[in-house]
Image (tube, rainbow, N blue to C red):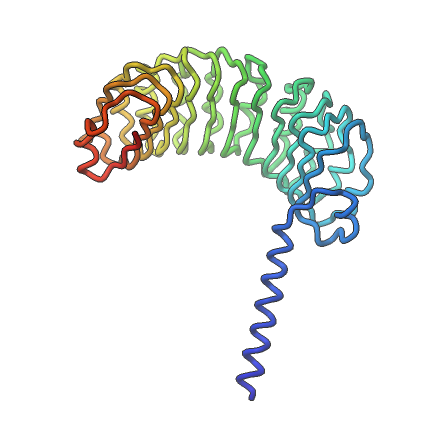
Length: 304
């Protein structure tokens, strides 16, 4: 009987823990609904707040960890956000405010910030505020078109993920090397012609996006990337490549190579140099099926 009671207690406890876990995964999409049980709300996405300047209800969500105000076209940053002491992820994309409050830098739990398509934001000011966040690891600045990176980005030394997609960047500054903790860097859809030589100092970089970067000198870029010992994944999609420079074989740490949506008919990848290679994506090219047998026979998966 004692064993049965103990078993039942364990089952009830496990069920309770599972229920707690499920609660943390629930995404609320109504602020009104969220404030009905504020301490049970961990994730909130609200997309109907246009022209709202104050959100006093937010302060009640003491356990909130994820907040998305994406696409709300807010012209004023809701100051109540800074009271969310447990917030880890903040998506402010597609809004219209011009600055971030200095108080945002006091949000010590904040790890991820998304500012995509915030076209009116003063990014020099915003990056200055973000640079004071002690635990910021992920920053998204996509679809902004600022052509030149804010100088303060180089001070975000703890970043592990930085996305700068479709920003019309004409150059990548040498100071990018200061982001020595970067693991993922997205530079897709820009207009720069070369990578900075200092990129070789990003020794922790594991995944790099250079897709839709048609103007880039890939031959020289590959030589530089060959100095990155942890670079495992490289995205080169949609670059109008008709010829893949043989310097691609310099990147000996490569495991996954995405070449889809190019104009390649021949791909000269040397297995004796790319010993870690596991996947090559050649979808939407003209490389004949069966011509990559020297790789397939050694376990490399080829997608045609």
